[in-house]
Amino acid sequence: MSDRQARRDLNLLAAGLALSTAGDAAALVALLLRLQPHGSAWVAGLLAAELIPYVVLAPLTGRVVDRFETRGVLLIALAGQAVLCVPLAFAEPLWATLALFAGIMALSAFVRPATSALVPAITGKEEAQRGYSRLATGTGLGWIFGPAAGGLLTGAFGPTTAILADAATFALLTLACSAVRARRHPAPADPDGPTARGGLRLLFGDRLLRTALIGSAIAISSGVIDNVAAPFRFVDQLHAGDSGYGLYLTLWGLGALVGAQLVPRIRLSSAVLLAVGNLLCGLGIAAIGLAPTLVLAFVASTAGGVGNGLMNVTQSALISERTPATQHGRAFAASGAVIQTAMGAGTAVAAPLVALLRADGAMLTAGLVTAASSLVALLITLRNRHNR
Image (cartoon, rainbow, N blue to C red; front, side, top):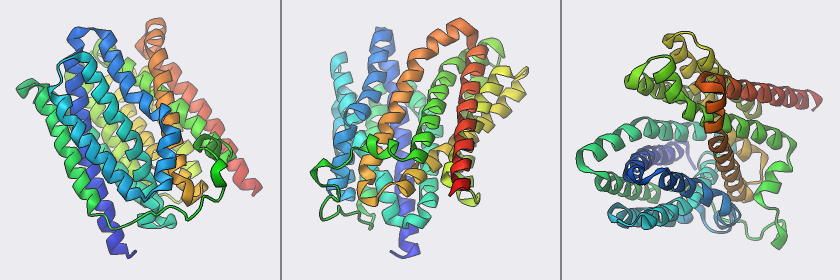
């Protein structure tokens, strides 16, 4: 594929992901606002429906992405999400809301590994890091503008409009992907036969990937703790008010965009950059917990976001580099399951940790644990490179 065609395909995917991610964020805000009056159990159920399909379906989604033409899998999953969003918008029983949302997330469990596996087919293996950087930019823009759009649409027109807007973004992403020319075809035969290694064994059988993913899982868990503690830290302890808390979220998101753009420009391996990103993310969270003033907390938020952006890009690039192209679907599905499990673990411990240590202590603890584990991962990575 020519460089021009590769840039075109990447731009189509990135633009589609920006719109779809914004729609997802808007719909999630609308659903949370719809369920919140009915009690915390329904809100917890919605969050569980968001996480569980990635973990439970990972073995299936990875094999499907590797067994069939990848763009075709992506188009079917995206079209299915657009269709399911319509009854979700009008659903009245709460159980139906959860069931339809879980169905959308189940299809999303196919979309993410398919998108990640398609990038090296577009860019070539050598330029995959730059491709993941482009997609992370689109996703980051979506997460910056999506929640605000969801709040505005829900407040002005109700949750039905916000969810229908998400259906429209899925339809637009489907159109964008249909125009992508790159194809990732399955291998004529699985080189490992019918007993081909599963995604987790593929990832954890590689020492470098094992070290990197454990470090990332700890960083992601800490990021969830940060999400829970941040409202109390900024509003109650630093007296930032609602606007100050919103600025924190914006600065973190902008930092992530900057981090994603920096990756192709830094001449370090993906493994080293991933450990550095996790380290910076942990130090940023810890510094928010320590910051004596609001300005310093905002600076720390931006730095943590940069680390988050480095992590988002380099983790995908490292998996692409260290696993066979014919098994990228399995590898990315398994890494998605690891990420979602880490998010679930962070969610489970966040509230008790904030209650025990207060917001500042919880963020300091989570950040230092992440920084320490990332430093260990960085030292192991550097030692392995030296030995080679």
